[in-house]
Image: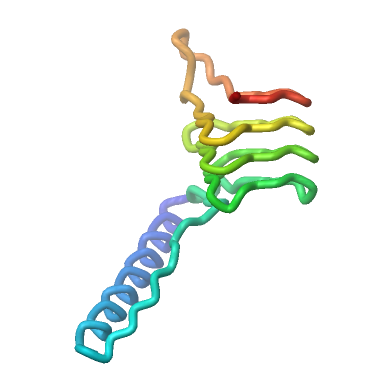
Length: 130
């Protein structure tokens, strides 16, 4: 994503934050008649600029899991409750039939000690966690 794309992304964030601030102000002005609905702002799939998660249609991702950035999840794979897959600095590839158990964290470094860029690759039919 180029400089213009990042600028547009930043403006979009500012507009959303302004809308949220106006909502909070309106709630305060209602006084005793205030009804504030508690909504979860959790997003299961979250892109980072142009890095978008790619989850196969036959895969399961739990509602409380977080799949962030450049992550590919294969067919019949499952990402269970509380899991975090962070593909922010490099890519993560989860093979088919793989099971990422509850509260697991999969992250990747930008490069190894010798400076070589290597993604995290979890193969087919693998279980990660207990």
